[in-house]
Image (cartoon, rainbow, N blue to C red; front, side):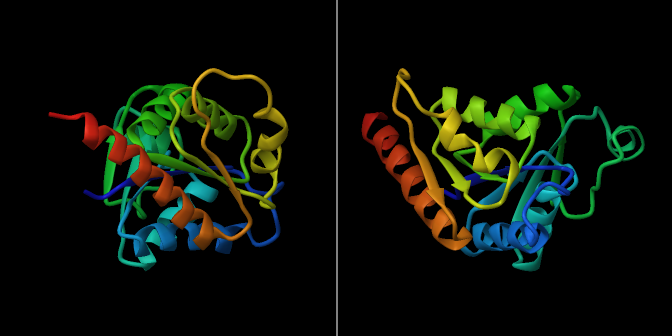
Length: 187
């Protein structure tokens, strides 16, 4: 079974690190190289660059759109469609889309980010998905360590890494560990 890895990050990247486009593309390429499926919020910036990288590496990507249709995705939301193999039109605007996309993933990678990325992080955190944070990319990614401290219920699996290849590999290892627990419990 192929794992589904969501990439969450800033749609507008002016506050991100200098090489954010190439870094995001490398995350997408690495997800493809590891034979996983890329999931994004089908938006611009980091998610779009990751989808382009995935496509460059002959990978498979799924976009979760906030819109109700392709026409609304392109005309109302002004979002791209060219980098995605499948588009799911959630009709749930951004906050609903964030929830659906994050819960559909086996794990999530945080790259830079703003409030939407924080929302996706918190959703993954609360449903106890493995989370990989690409440190040094700016925005939300560089603030998570400060936010995710303190006494919390449940198991927290947050992986901090500066190297995208290492991050994706470590995240997949955490996903496999999660999946093995489920397989042991199933009839």
